[in-house]
Length: 220
Image 1 (tube, rainbow, N blue to C red):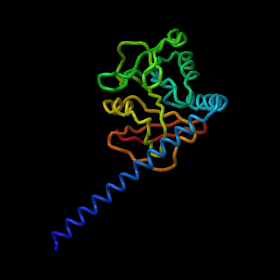
Image 2 (image 1 turned 180 degrees about the horizontal axis):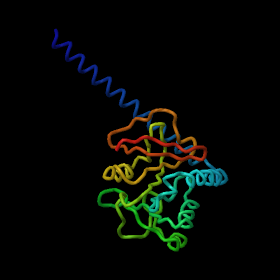
Image 3 (image 1 turned 90 degrees about the vertical axis):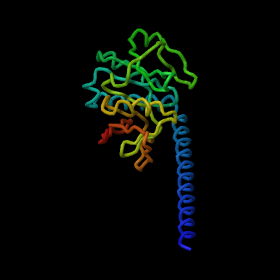
Image 4 (image 1 turned 135 degrees about the vertical axis):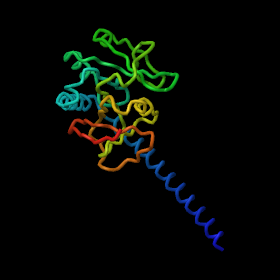
């Protein structure tokens, strides 16, 4: 009887864990869909207002002031726009690096872009829909002082939910100490709750949205 009960308990526990995992997966998928829809629904006027407000927060952020080599994304899916931020970096004589996907390992490398190349739109369109610099190679992420990252959501612990491709997680896994990781998003993308953090998820050091700046204590 004891053996039967042990087997029953094992099966029950396994089924319960599977159901919990299933419902959490559904919940995460629904959250992703909702956030994408909210982001996509922003109009041009709202985007301009949010870009200006975020830019003011970034300009005052201590790690932006001290950074010289800055990695910045090119917005493509309703993220906080980065055009004014990139121009600000050029004005402050900071070096701007843009991400490019390395097809060999599906990680991001960072390509330094000049003001002239940026303004002349020297980019190619990736199959995923975003623009990339036209270059044959780039630098490892550890070369940067500050990395400004897009996201779908961020919680109060600095857990970052990306678009689902895992490019930033794979890239930062090989560089736990540098650069400083700063998420950038809309107000509704900051969630005052706990997001599930998987072992491969790379947490943030800080997060900026139009309304507020956040600082997190990240353990490398």
